[in-house]
Amino acid sequence: MAELTVAILAVPRLIALDLSIPLHILGRCDGYRVIVCGESMATHPLSAASDADIVVVPGYDQPEIPLPADYLELIRLSADRGARMVGICTGTLALAAAASWTGGT
Image (tube, rainbow, N blue to C red; front, side, top):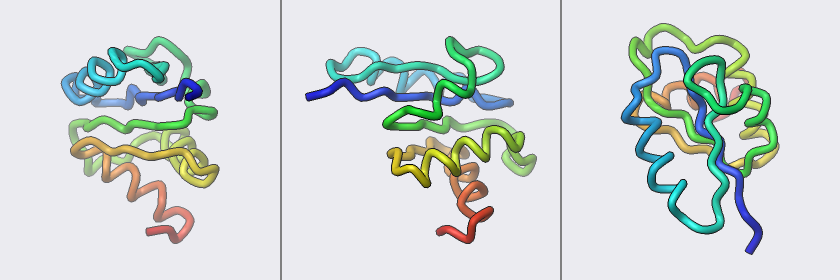
């Protein structure tokens, strides 16, 4: 089985626990290469998530404030190309916001 790349997005206002859980669990499993992508608290730039097999959007504070457009665009493009999308807690709101740009559900 080929190794799958998991990109966890270090979104603004990140809830650290929501980043650390998938990092801890998937980082210990064979078959996964886990990277943290974003502008801060990240090991890779946001653009590194553009080829990931799985994209994880962790929860973040103040979900009534939209994420920056570059994060939402990356989420939308990742879903469009068929990546598996995972939202944790308020991260699901970012998935919904990105889908609403294109009329998705």
